[in-house]
Amino acid sequence: MRDPLAEQFEDLEKQASAARLGMWAFLGSEVLLFSGLFALYAGYRTMYPADFASAVAHDNVAIGTTNTFILLTSSLTVALAVHAIRAARARRAAGLLLASVALGLLFLVLKGFEYAEHFRQGIYPGDRYRFAELSGYGAKTFFTIYYVATGLHALHVTAGISVLGYLAWACRRGHYTPEYHMPLELGGLYWHLVDIVWIFLWPLLYLAHA
Amino acid sequence: MIAPTTTEGSKRHPSWLRYVVIWLCLLALTSASFLLSLAHLGAVDVVVALGIAVAKSSLVLLFFMHLLEHRFSNAMIVLVSCALVVLLVSLVAADVATRHTFPPAPAPLGEPD
Image (cartoon, rainbow over all chains, first blue to last red):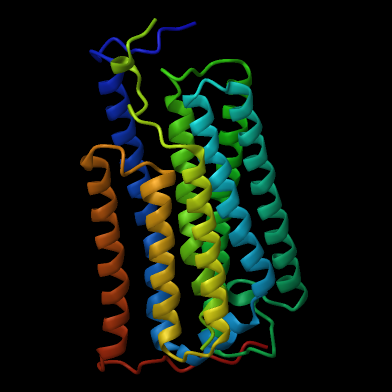
């Protein structure tokens, strides 16, 4: 097995700190990426409060809430996987990561059903919007932001699923030990960030209908 | 045998039960947020829902992402990012709400058909 300590570091502790700081800097840049969409939401919601409220009320809160529970549970299984590898239980860690992958896929399937329901009603992003029941300018704007925000989030879920799938395979192959499992820890951080973004999207897109 | 000081994990590992307790708190907060959204609180409901979202993400950050265990430089990045999001979102909303140099809502260019 390759020496886990890169030559420019004196010890694993320093290497781990550097790796974590780099990952947090990346996660910070991801927050900036999503913050533009949150700002658009805030601006247009202030401009069209009534249209936004009725558009939010139209969203499928059952699917949205189920997906919230799914992502929170997948975050738990990722946290437990990191815990398992710290205790040298690589097979258990691999199993927990595969459970997270399954939950992530379930999230995407439910999201797909939701998109299909919208498409059937003529709710498309931008100029393609054809939903007569909510014909206001604000409703059209809401759903365009909805598609961009949930679409960008779904891309992150897809990337996270691939990362977790790779990590499960690597755990299974015995690549990680209690002393060296930094990829698993960093991949876990990415998945938790995807969860946090959804923690904010869920109330804004499904709950705030007053 | 590798000395414990050379491991990259933290020295004291919390029990797995801690993660399950945090997860149960997250589920409880999610249910509370959902039930409050049915209560027709009016304009405060966005504030309440976002407050609960902040509480939930703090739990994820501090425990699932181990910010509590690690050095403060990591938390610093989170704090600065959050400050930027709060400023950006609140100032964009404040600008739209208070600017009177243009009509608050542009006249629709034509009803979507």
